[in-house]
Length: 230
Ligand code: CA
Image (cartoon, rainbow, N blue to C red; front, top):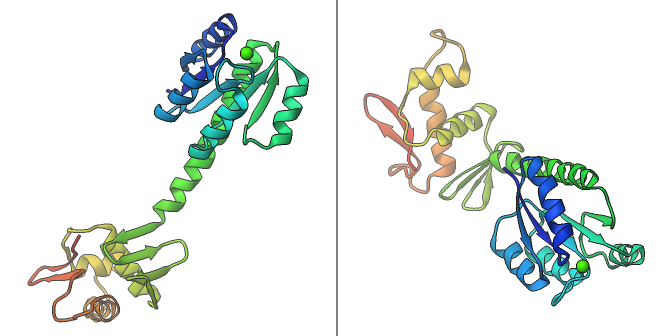
């Protein structure tokens, strides 16, 4: 459930906004001063903030600026004066949207939903990009770019070497037989020469291990197969 913080000194307005947002299944907190709002915004993981401009204590301009330094969640600023909205835009404080009071609560809810959806898409995309990197100790495999770095130095791998290394690194501590690896990477079933696996493991080790006789990454389990040590 998305959590929303309303920073608003006019309690009637804050309560109205809260009621409408709660009807749409949002969890809502209210702070009535800039100082309390700023403290809550930095301490609690809110998904979106509705921020009034004119507040007792620290004003909305400053609250927006300080939240923006630490967090990239959507901030929707509201003000009773059209001129203030122009001023906010001009200052480039990093607010995501602006509304002039009075506004209809249903419009507020619609905008909140739009910003949350947009933000979740952005965050989701970032996480996806991070998932394309496999990192175990000194080895960093960029699956998207198909590049491998050992202690920060890029090493060149053939297609099959890359696939084999990535497969093992993505299943650390799991012992695979040569047959399983052959099937997984070469996808040729029982035909073909499973000694190919041994040859490829040797080539990979030459590139990632500092001492081939004492492998730190791909370990041989005698009589069974190989595993990537974590
Ligand atoms: Ca106010």
